[in-house]
Length: 257
Image 1: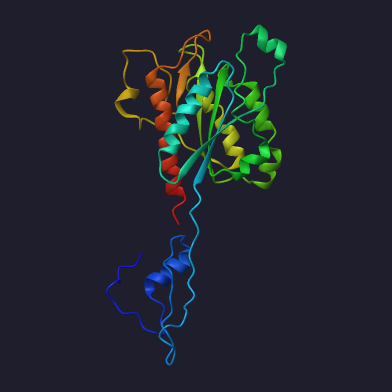
Image 2 (image 1 turned 90 degrees about the vertical axis):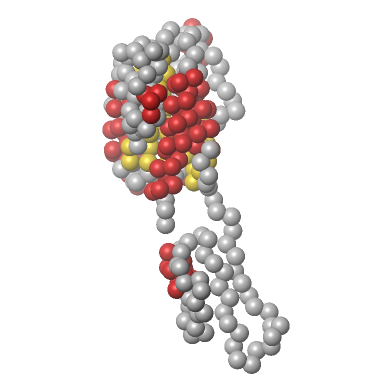
């Protein structure tokens, strides 16, 4: 915004603050009311234009969760995203690829119908992403890989290029891939031209605590699932919420006009 608020604009020259805002396409551009021409009636109607409400930036939180651990992180992550003004988190799950009888034998709980399944084409509507998945031998689960494999048309048109994305994961053991699961997934972003956004050590002192078991790494939030019965700890959920806030803040900086 300009700083010449105390100057009287010329009748033949658009005020510099208005010109600058108009050139930048600002959504909050001031309303321009032209000076009345000589001889105009004092009460003549002057047309003005107003801008509509500013649409929120959207971060799609797309995940696969078999036992609910990744879903728990995703829900807490949405709280973090929604806590940043001007940004909204939207939860989606990817399609299941295992047959129902196999899931029953694995004692996997039913999926929450309140979270819709996403198609590859819908990704183009997002401004940023947080992808969550459990590990399979240090890589993402097949269900999430199958989803990424379906994004060929988006890759061909580079529809996702330049958009920021991060990862969060679930592993069964402490050596099961809290870092490598996210690290090996970066190839998916690279081919789409997307920007990988790790959290580093921005969570602060909680990243250095050694008095309890916790998931999470500089690559992103994480949870230890054990045999499937262990619930996420408060620290693991807090890191997930922090990642949501952090990604939302990064997205806002990238979208500054």
